[in-house]
Amino acid sequence: MSRRLVFAVAFFAFALGAAADASAAVSKRFGSVTVTCDDERHCAASIQAANADKASVVVLQRSPESRARWTVSISTLGVLADRDRPVALSVDNGVDSTLYPGSDYAPFVHPSDYYIVSPAALGRLMLQIQRGHMLRFSFIDIAGNAHTDRFPLDGLADALNEIDRQQGRIPGDRRAGPPENLPEAPDVDAGAHLSAAGVPPRLLELHLASAACEKPDAADIAGAEPLIAPLGETATLYVIPCYRNASGLASRLYTIDRGEIGGINPLLFAGFSERLGWYGVDVLFDVAYDAESRRLEASGADDQGCAFRAGWTFTDTAFRLDRLSAATSCGGAASGWTDVYPAR
Image (cartoon, rainbow, N blue to C red; front, side, top):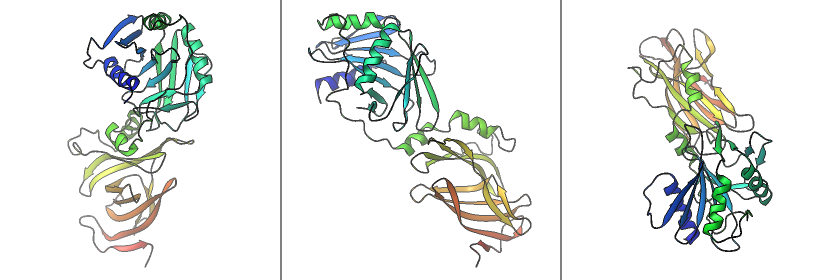
């Protein structure tokens, strides 16, 4: 591991309040900016996001070598940006600079550390942030949620001048470039990350707006965890417990798509009973989903307790019905199952 990488990793631990060796790194404060330099004069200026609920940090870092250039990174700590989508930067609510994945920015070291790699974007940003008051960073996370982080820039010019002084450089050298000798960030297990993140607040709000669904802490569904799983490259399935009765645990199902036509989509499925024929149902019981095959298994019932059980496969943008059997008796224990689709 290079000396520069060692400092980069140590710096992030220091900036987030982890224990640090005072002899290895010394920090000074300039307005909203913290300058940290180690004993070999690897220096970084960090700015914490002003948002009360954000831990994001922007870092301008430079090695002591005479030909070294500034690198600029933004770490979205606690929220993972979708590395396949453009992000936007602006200073003092000016015109957004759109950065495209790969050509303009890329993650290095950690999946949440995004470095600007475009020389043109870096040159423009370095000019703007020394004169501005607020840097705004807008992005979409891997669950499809929009975020905007704001970083106050007061004290930045003095902080960069301090690093010039610490490194014995000519004051005002603001040449910037992409990171060197840093490993690309590893791929992310999106399914595991989304599952750990839980149900997005905006989806939970939509779910609880239904009078039919109980709150998550209600006695009969307390402890029932939502099922969260990837459906494809851009879509995620959320199965959220709704209520429990004699038929089992009832859930409502949603998808969140972070693609070009993204958004939250409540799912409606086809049910069948001898009494009603085909009908739509927005609640399924005892849902099971296999992410590898994209197969969904569940049961349902009409308003008189006439049950059905079915299987679906997610294809491209929707669940395709593969099979459905309906009970010939209603209420109590279902019996006399008849194959409705495909019909025998």
